[in-house]
Length: 637
Image (tube, rainbow, N blue to C red):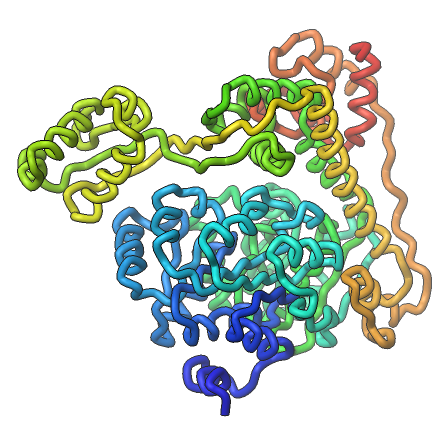
């Protein structure tokens, strides 16, 4: 028996590997990097958890899913495996204890959110450790061709080199061939080490139900009542809709709960726990729910609204039937849903003039500069994620180079009296610490210190102040809290501004078109009369040898026609709303695209305070492009 198989049985309590697991683990144990593309629930996590016990050093797991981190660390602890997680829910004392365990080599696995890798103190600590394996969950996020590209992820390939990670494991359930190729290229993974096990799951019966919006609730109710007591997830697009549908189901006697990102964390956790324990049969949720949820007996997934892409759809239906039991996945195909989803896409595209102004501002800040994304977002009326994407693209273009994020402000609480703290150092070091503390502003409990300003006042390198604070905290002499994160950059070249702005503008236009194309692919999938699993497999570069025989296309054996997309011209009252809003001459609504976003119910940093305005969202059912064209014509742009 191999050592890996022995650990599988003795530590993880499993008798055999699933498809693809042993091949991935063997390559990792041989020191090679690997990409695994397994379906949701296909056992990706074992591919790094097991090798972590057999290789010397730390396995660092990067994941955006806090629920997954919490569940997996708890499960590892139950098996006696030294693991920890760093996420936004950790207290200062918990973080310090994890740092101590890392320095002493006591941890085998550490789970972190990608944002944690921007923390300069944490990165400094990692550089002194042996990173035996870097596991990147949801690895499709690294690719700009993926369906939910995240700028933080794009830097992970460079980070793997910076940390001298001995091997990389990229994991995803939703990589098209082009995305898989991009992941392999960035991490230097050989094509032969791209392991995928196929996307077809025979226990899932896929269905498409063409309907109008008014038809959804009655059909959903009938389906839930016919399978009373079974665990199910219902996906909707909007937070308000989650609450409305859950309330309607409750009135019909269904044990349903709403779940969305707008709820307080403790409320979300209680709903999740109730669902896991079987105290709630049905969760009506936005896509915030299900990421990392390991509930094996979900018997049905309903898409009350259209998903944003086939990748999202595949990931969401993958939460059904993880125990191998027969499960249903029903898509209510209402073309009218497309309006809201399209509008979300348009809301992310910056106003061209604002994008140009942002780029010009960044390149006017000198050879080295630092910025706060939140400040730029408000100044240029561009969403923070888009600001981060701009900065990432400028780095990819070789215009700027990130030199690391830092916190501008440290709040310091003395755990021992200052005099006692200073008495523990020689005269020169005590004098330095005394002068550093004197630059801060003392409150009732916390001393607030702007590290950059303090370094300039003292004529000392900023790094010396940070090392002093880190040392004092390690000794237990002080506790710190940080805030005011700023990104630091170095300008590498002075490009042709007109050409650069045009190129980045085209990138955002292309991303907008890609998102719209993905929405159309969902509609095409819903309308196509061919076998549904065969369509999905084909999209992800796989082939189904024969029709599944159980999806709605196979059972109905005929063309499927979706209701026509509603197309209502602007009414007289809506025209008046447009004119009245223009007449107000709001500073935050000077550009036609700003006005169009506002009227379609899309908030932006500059218009956040105006969301209670009577005109906000009054044209939410209208196509964004129609509203924009109307405004451009009206304003003569």
